Image (tube, one colour):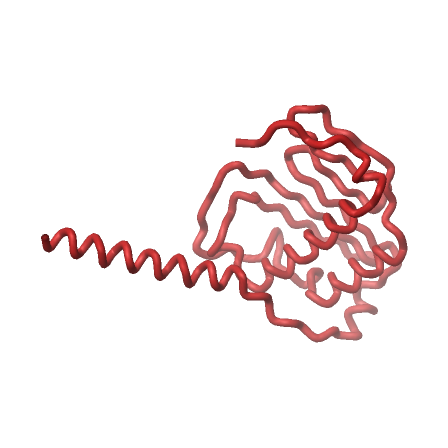
Length: 181
């Protein structure tokens, strides 16, 4: 009976820990004030990015090409140049979250957990003469990537994906078939 009580206590403690981690995962990152000097340090001139994953998806603002990962179908690449307004929004967000000051090759990961399926993500950004590259595996899950730096990085990634996925030329592409396991 004593062993049963111990197991119940361990189970309850594990549930409480997971609940705290989930709460932290959903907490938005702290807002950072804009620093006007950053607009001079990292000028809009020459701004662009390449965001790709090892499954074949690619968004390249320099070339104006986007590749959609269709899983079991051949990947499809189309011309899709982001507008100046979209690039301005992404640029301002990257300056606001201080992405150019972020540690490389990615924000620090704490309390690492791993999951499948996963993909390697590569993100290169340039503003003026400054270029930063970030590479990480998407299987690195919370609590490891729940720091505010990670949350801000994912805000930018999701913003970029959202802009691309709302475009009619992207929405006209075929749906992916299959899944990654």
